[in-house]
Image (cartoon, rainbow over all chains, first blue to last red; front, side, top):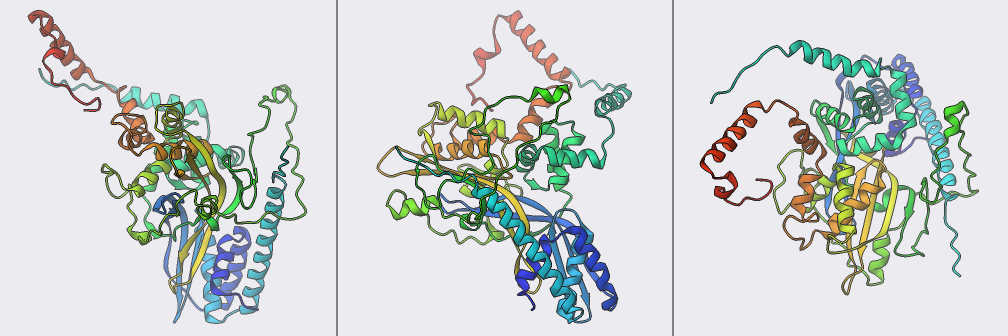
Length: 139
Length: 357
């Protein structure tokens, strides 16, 4: 089963760096020569909505790594938090492979596996958080 | 009188820097990794004040500055200017935050309940001196609940609005790219709310606390009660070249709403910052709450607190006094001697000025 594009990208952006680099390298055998449009670090400004008056304001900037590649009419894009150009490039390779219909089953399996790990991680975190809920007793 | 050019300090300067760095020894990837793992709240503080989120860089800056926070923040702010801005993300909405801690001191039974999350609020502050004698301090593990907490919590203010306690804010339709940005334009007074909140988000924690505390002690118009305090993670929502919105990862964010008990309705103050830093958010929200009608020159006046909580500017101005002022000081001495001779003082003839003029 293929994933919606937004869920696929979100999962890849949060995936384990070593795992996606290894997987992305393996994808190169399935792809034609790739043109690199950009491979760089940069900043994403993160705005927030104030809850008192509803004003949008800038909270600060986040360091990200970005990769944008092309293979014929197909494009791949990766952006991940942090300073890891290889991981961003690996993300772009997966995106490109899915866009071009190459190694789709492998890519889908990788995304599914990473999504499952991330859900399990969130579940564990939330169970630990729930342990700190105050069960208030009023006298 | 003329300026006097001098030379001869190059070697002393070179050796002084070496002496500073020699104290700290070699900086290795392992040291940076250890700082990042062991001191997350310090990392958060530095990232918030630098207005740049990256734990690795913040840990490196701390290592390189030997733990001097102002130097570390300056390193990060300077490095930031070397990077292009690739995107402006979609604004974070409170109800989308992956929430680790969320409490209210104003209302016991808030929707979603009180979730303490990671905190030392109710702990005994006892230093583990055994560690200095060779023992290991191993924290007790959390006993997880069988069921998870909700990832997202409802807004306390929205619930209060439903009960006619506060007015729900209108929706700000400013496009993310058009939100005023203090890194691209000067702050003019009265400042836009966007400038005020951004400046507070990157403000120095200690300075914000000092001025916020002054307001809490009575040098302000309103005493704060914490309406809602959150430690959470926010998704960085960016756009793929094909138009798909996705999250490029999560960042830690803290936010505080404080409420004033004065008047017929409740008034809210707000602040947020990158990283988890509760003291700064509560202090900054207190300043926001107290801004309206604050007397000129008081700690809660917007111009006063925004200028005096900017850590890079204030620390920079402070340390510049260490640099040679031989000519200006000599000039002051000359003026003093001349005044003594003529029996007048400079103060008698100079017009009154504002303190910062």
